[in-house]
Image 1 (cartoon, one colour):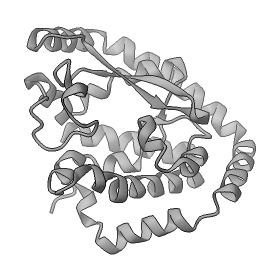
Image 2 (cartoon, one colour; image 1 turned 135 degrees about the vertical axis):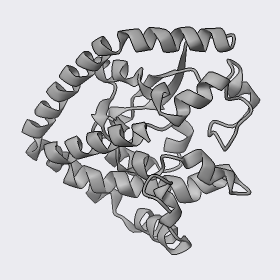
Image 3 (spheres, rainbow, N blue to C red; image 1 turned 180 degrees about the vertical axis):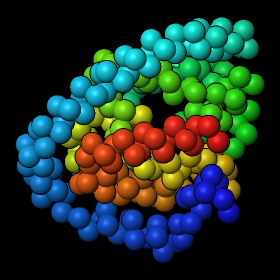
Image 4 (spheres, one colour; image 1 turned 90 degrees about the vertical axis):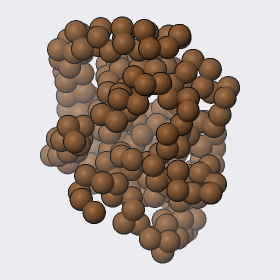
Amino acid sequence: MSAQETASMSFTAADYARFRARIKQTDWQAAYRAGLARQKRRRGFLIIKRLGDLILSLLLLLLLLIPFAIIALTVKLDSPGPVFFKQQRMGRDLKPFAILKFRTMTADAEQRGRQITVGADRRITRTGAVLRRYKLDELPQFINVLKGDMSIVGPRPEVPRYVAAYPEVFRVLLLTRPGITDRASLVYRDENQVLEQSPDPERSYLEEVLPAKLCLALDYQQEAGVFRDLRLIFQTAARMKS
């Protein structure tokens, strides 16, 4: 299996059991206090991170004006509905915000099925399939970064009902802004293909994939730094080309 294929396939049943056990056995009250103390110690890094987010997101949005216009026109011509897809996600300090993506599914997709996407979902449009393959549907989230809803690097924001499944974990994770990319995003780049193989994708996501993502995000939170963020950004850019 090549490095470009889904790395999540390397996780065994024992790995997923270990992730679940970590979440179950952690003292989340202590973890929250430790997270607050870590925020105070890293105040300088967080200022640099926010400045970097502002500068990079503004530059990219300016550079991508023409590609944005082309993608927007293609989305509009391909199927009826808005150019952007907006969905409520949980942000820093568990405050909800509207995440932005280029619409890749039919306008009534949320009424026609589950919130997770599995395999060759019939709700995905022709343009949407291409955008999803190269993660181009995520580009409008640089607007979320500019607004302060998100960071470029950080745990991916989840919908409220998935946050409600692990409230104490997300309380710790969302001491900082969620992000466009993180290690879990790279590991689960082909998440929908992985879930397609499950007889119950929703249960697999909640009991296997999400705990794994949370543990990877917790590891990042403890080790976050400028060079680690830069490495994740370059790794994400490289994956988008593949």
